Amino acid sequence: MILLETITEDKIRQMVTQFYQKVRNDDLLGPVFGDQIADPDWPHHLDRMCDFWSSILLTTGRFHGNPRLKHAALPHIEPEHFERWLALFEPTLHEIYDADTANQIFARALRMREVLQTAACA
Image (cartoon, rainbow, N blue to C red; front, top):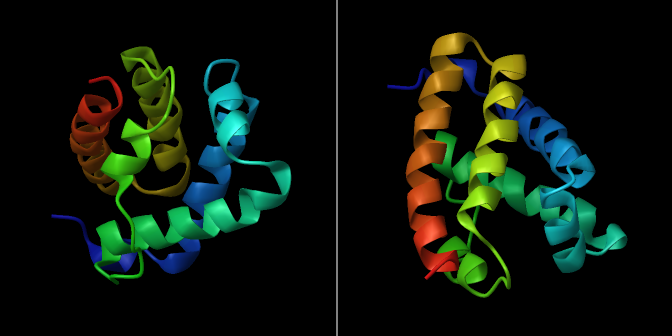
């Protein structure tokens, strides 16, 4: 079980910001996200992702949306995109959280990948 005292809104914002900076600079994921999110829209996307992770990790209920449908509508998404997402996400977690917390958050990300990959690659 994740120790909620190790996860704060500030750490979630740091995680989201650092991770999506890596995504935007990535040769595989950068173009996919760049096609969907214009430069002026990135602050809004980051806020939504903070809401998403806050809802997942702190059960705040701030996120309202359907990630499964959103990913199903994306063109040209393949399993390797999800593998790269995880390959960037895991080290980001370890940069911010202790190993146990990072591993527990990553376990949730693995479960999410299964659902989103099934939707996107169907």
